[in-house]
Amino acid sequence: MPQYIAAQYGDRRRYLLKALREIAHRIEGLVVGLDEQVLSARPGDELHEEWCVNEIVGFLRDSEREDLRAIETMVERDGVPIAPRRAQHGPGETDYRHARVEPLVWDFMTLREETVWTLRAADSAWDHRGRDPYRGHVSLHEWVQEMNERDLDALWRIQRLVGHFSAAPRRRGA
Image (cartoon, rainbow, N blue to C red; front, side, top):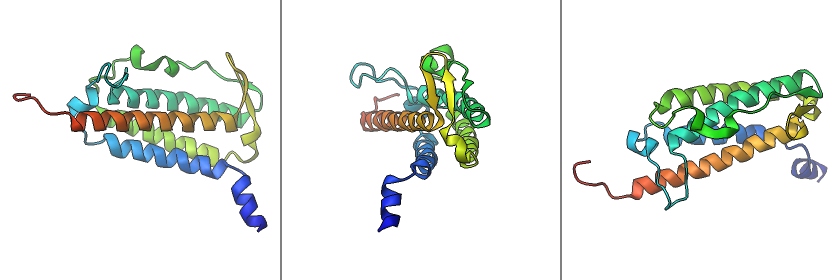
């Protein structure tokens, strides 16, 4: 019985590490091999989606790069300042719409593996806090939970876009 309680209510680190890896692999599986038109298409008002699949993947890659730097900083030292995020501004700063998705996904997956290994080795540093310029102190654990939520949101958006454009009838001559 005590083992069950520890697993149910105990440390969520293992769950978060597993989720970070699995959701990233699910995203990779969804986008690799998709038709270029599906990758760059924006549905407009019908889904209230502003970004295409390529832009979402580009955003994930840019966010992962910034998150890895923040995580490495927090693991190294408690209470350290964290650089402001640029990726939160979205893909508007870089034209990902017509980029090849494979290099974006490859970079994202490579960065994600590095992130997961850094977190696995973090041990007691999971309790460390970083000082975000806008939010104040944020624990490493909170940071990783937010990454997981961002991944889930991105996965949901990509699935919705892929489903929308896969179901859309093709025009003749297109």
